[in-house]
Length: 149
Image (cartoon, rainbow, N blue to C red; front, top):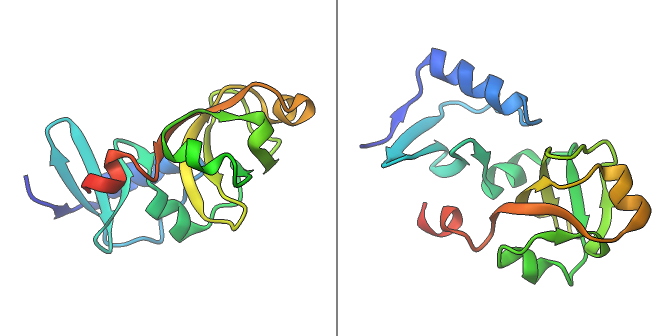
């Protein structure tokens, strides 16, 4: 199926869905949608911004989010880029309001977003003990979203 511009109704639904995870796409227009098999890919200015309800790295770097972010050190970056989970020792700073199972946005120390994950613990717990897994990575720079779309 080819790309087409979202209807006002579908755009409103998308805006509401993204707001529920801390993403404001209300200023982006027009947004196009393409459906491939079971995948729904949303585009803005020709770039994939949402893939199956997951905001892409393109979108994160465009919006420059401040909430639900985690900053990692250089040692963690190659592991995250290969799809590994994020572990607490690699975290430099994070939003301590993050709760378990929140979608989180992972960036390098230069401020560029490199991944999207799901928090495995509350932010305050992660920063207090700095041990163990902090987030499961669900989208990263070297995945099929970045390479195929």
